[in-house]
Length: 145
Image (cartoon, rainbow, N blue to C red; front, side):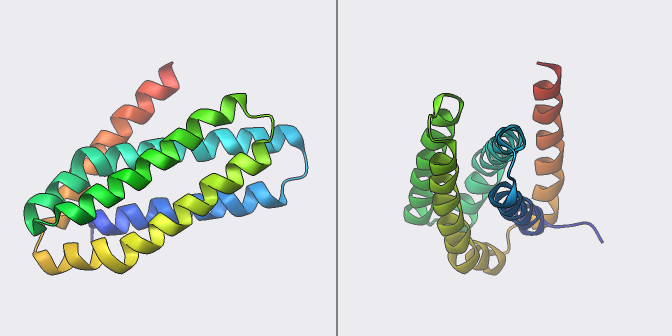
């Protein structure tokens, strides 16, 4: 059975949680820098797909503008931290701040938004296909750059 949109987003969440663990255990500064770049890319792809596809569908299906605005505010906080990574003199601290924000946001999505989305009757399987296609398009563009 194909994954639905929430399962895809959760796969992203688990991937990033694992990357944070790898970052914490990495001893080599170059390995940490590479992991930081991967974390930032994964989060950028994830937030883009959520904002372009999942969030608008969620807002339309549930009418919960307040939950949507809160999620977008949290995304912006993470984006602002990601923008600091290339110039950070304390990359460990910046990645830790990103991790703290992301884990908080993920927990809120799991407890609130995802449950509400499932209850709303959203077309989660259809959304998953659109999300996978969009993610692949953007990933390919990043790889070519």
